[in-house]
Image 1 (cartoon, helix red, strand yellow):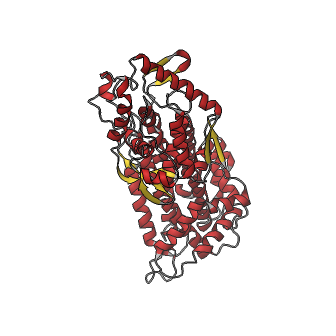
Image 2 (cartoon, rainbow, N blue to C red):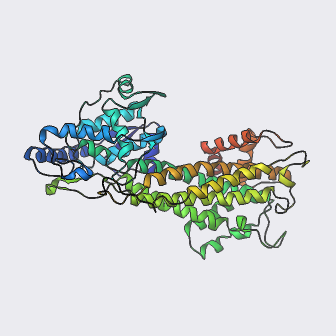
Length: 510
């Protein structure tokens, strides 16, 4: 399969198809023409000795230093090797492939002045599976993701480190094994064009929001399973309640749960067993819906940024102008990614509260304490809730916004920074915690359903329960619990639960 870029806007699904599904990338002819026109303008500026930031001057505080025509190649190389200051663990392969794709998509729009041969190298690396080793830390998210993007460019120069077919090599070795030729030098502006942008934070955040959208569907399934186990009152999900408030996420959540629970015999109506359910059940549409609305907002912002020109300076060939601005600043992404972390954290918060109701004999409507028979000898799901509580508390720390911080750099020339890359990485870490909490709720709810001996589950909950029981057997006595949790988490990662549920009830809405 192939993705043609430069002739349309990239979508989140396009990104995932390249980074995870093996799609190859091809640049459109229209885009190549734009690249050539912008490059000519750069060459003209160098030839004429015009003063323009990043083309004939130094960078940051050195913007007042004029660089001669003979020194431009040295300037660009020095920029890359001096800026490759990343530290920490490497970013995941899919996120790095996303960085590369988004960088190419930024540069082919004809406002950066890079040569086609440099872009072709980056595309060839994507298509042949050479993935730079990029440390996760070191970006302030303001002058672009300078440090991590420099590690990407090192490999293009035959330096640094890169993965190829699952093994880590030097950059030059990885390129040779893939039969790719490195470029030994960069021309005027090219180094700056390759590293001045928001593609690291955008790739990390884009993958996180994509996974969060799928995880949100699992959260609706988890809530439905808990409703089955706790004889939940379905009246709170009546569409009329949702419509008079009007929020789309809330409306869609109630629709999802009603579809998933259709035909269930364990669901009750108000007044049958009790008048009201607690908020963790009754307010599921409102709480899930708020996170859904956040995810849709964030997705919109991410797709704008995926197609944005975030270089500096920006070339406008038709006006014969090169303008220095601030499109590299990550603030438009930093705030949404902080919002993403908060929306994700809330998903786990309500899931853990339902888990607590399932295990607590004072709250679980007659189920055995901690969901196990012969309690005392057996602890059952007691410490599962401990673990979930630990994760949601950790999320509360991680959800503190990174974007409210700033620190000056480059001798105060760069005196406000976004911390957007930190915001994206934090959101990604929260996502992992949330997935584990939802796995715990699903596991506990399935146990509660079996203990309740439900006669007939809903159309969707029956499918989810069956899938879980195919990999995790009923909990009749204490066993090593983390194994069960990991199995359900892996089931969530594959998206099989949602796929099976949707086969039976139709598409779940976000």
